[in-house]
Length: 309
Image (cartoon, rainbow, N blue to C red; front, top):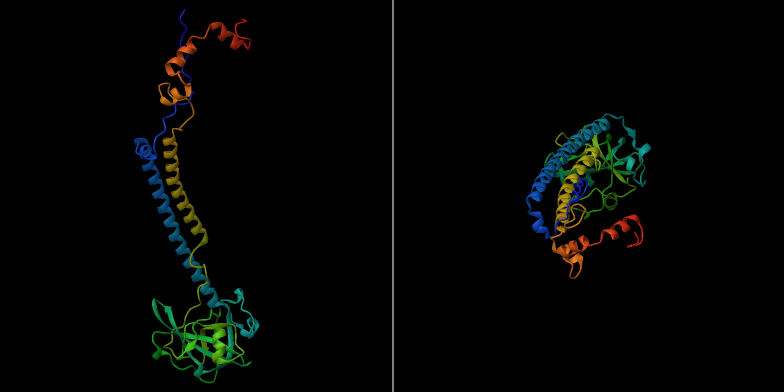
C-alpha cells in the first residue's frame, strides 16, 4: 500500500544559496532594493542630524546672549576681592565684572594686532592702568580699525569697570608699540610689576574715554556656541545613518556567503554532492537510504539492536 507523502513542514528553513562574490551578490535585484531603502533611511538620518546641528547653533547663541546680558547686568565687585597681583588666575574668575581705580600710563599703550570685531580685523587698544595699590592692570579699552583711531587714554585718576579675562599665552613680544598677545609675562618686561595675571575688558570708565573706540563685549566661553543636547542628538542621527549603510554591507556579505537562513543545500548542488563523499552523489545517497531494510528502520526507531525486532 502506497504511503501518503508527509505534509511540508511550514517551519522548515529555506535551503541555503550557493556562495558567490560580494559584487555579484550586491547587484542582485533584492540587494539593490534593500540598498535603495537603506540609502533613503540614511539620507533621512543625515537630514535630521543637520537639523539638530542647526538647532544646536540657534540655542547655543541664545544661551550665550542670555549669559552676556546677565554678566553686563551684574553688579561689579572690587578687583581686590576677586584677583590680587601675581595671584594665579582660575576659571571661575573669567567673565567676572570688576571695578578698579587708577591712572593710565599713556606712554605704555600698545596695539594688539589681528583682532576681529563685527566681521572686521583691526586692533585692540591695550593700556596699562597703575592701580592705587601700585600694581599694573592691563586694560583693553576698545577696538579700532586703524592705529590712527587709537586716541590717548583719559588723564588723571579714572574709575574703570569691565570683565576679567585670563592672560593669553606668550606671543612674539612687543615692538614698535604693538604686540600679538595679551600676555602678562611679556607685558611685565615692558611695563614692570607687580602685574595682574589677567586683564580687564573695559565696559565703562569715568571720566569717559574717546568715543571712537568700540567697546568689545565679554569674550565667549569655550563650548558656549553650541547647545550640547542638540549636538548629541545630531551625532546620534548620523550614527544611525552610518549604521544603515553598514547593515546593507552585512546583508550583502551574508548573501554572498549563502548563509541567509539555516538548512541544507539542494540535493542537486555540487556542495551537497561533495558532502556526500566519494562515489555518493545525491542520487546514489538517496538510493542507498531508500534501500535500507524496513526491519532496520523499525529497530532503529525502537532503540533496539538492528535485526533483532
